[in-house]
Length: 256
Image 1 (spheres, helix red, strand yellow):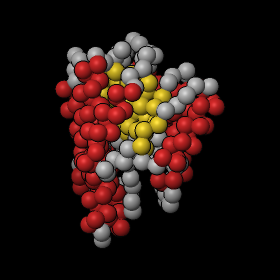
Image 2 (image 1 turned 60 degrees about the vertical axis):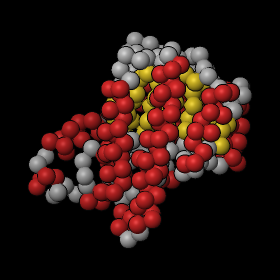
Image 3 (image 1 turned 180 degrees about the vertical axis):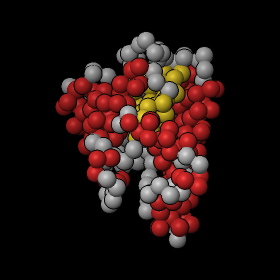
């Protein structure tokens, strides 16, 4: 059931989409449905989940169950997870829950900063541990998680968000090592800016703002090929390699 570099996405069991209503996750869900995969949608809004499931059921001509699960409802993670896996065999998970706030708002609001880290890192790790160990006990599967190129190098414009994603990237690298030889493939997805509601107000070069459909294609292709790290669009791999190689004194002068 596990992915390797010579296999397709597992066909047995459902693919869980956590954070279904995000722009990227929505397009990943549609891409999986086009390929004939069964899904289960996970998110905090029952109404939004039902609407998304109805759309996917029409597109794929198959039932799409939903699971209402608030990432910040930390007291009920184990309960929600047990309910999910008791009714559903999983072949893999695409995890896209997270938030992005303007840096100036975060600098002046400690509660908002704590909320960002809870969503992007702390509670995400707690939930990913549940999925990873379940897939390990099951004998394999994939875990593909949305991080960001912002976690590759600290930048003034998004230092807090970038720190949360740097922590997530480091965790996923460690989880990948821990799952080695278990049949569980752990993938880190690092998109640049993507045209979704999360990036409303984006002020960077328009050429760097990717379309969610293209990003979803890169993600599904990366899952299919078993890549450990997926940069999307692909040019970000080179861009971030250059930025990471700069001495900090020079990196501070790069706009943004």
